[in-house]
Image 1: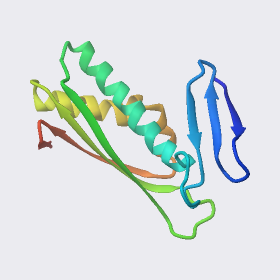
Image 2: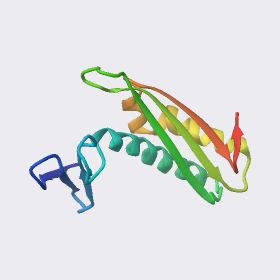
Image 3: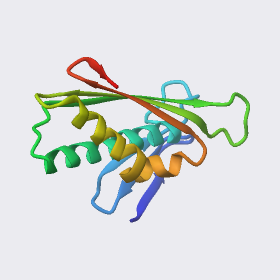
Image 4: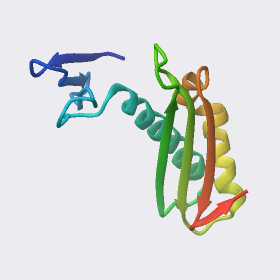
Length: 140
């Protein structure tokens, strides 16, 4: 796995490109009018994407048709710490479909606790917590 990074301006705007040519813009979120996501935001996007892929895959293997999947992810850092790593990550997984709530919860549990590579890396510094909702109702 390789990426290429290129600086686009005199400040902190960068373009990254993977081997397939997919482009992601990075910037310093402290800058006025940033032109891309911050590296730390990309980590949150990464855990959301990684977990979502797992959830879809797990449910597909069970022949469960998922109507919609959305996720809200929030990262927390200790003010003034250097390096300023995530100490906690809270995830809200919003699923929609006609299937049992226990299947929804199990798919998310498997993703976060076992399969999601990004979560497994981030859990070294951050406590990861999550809530699962199926059709708007919290699943316990």
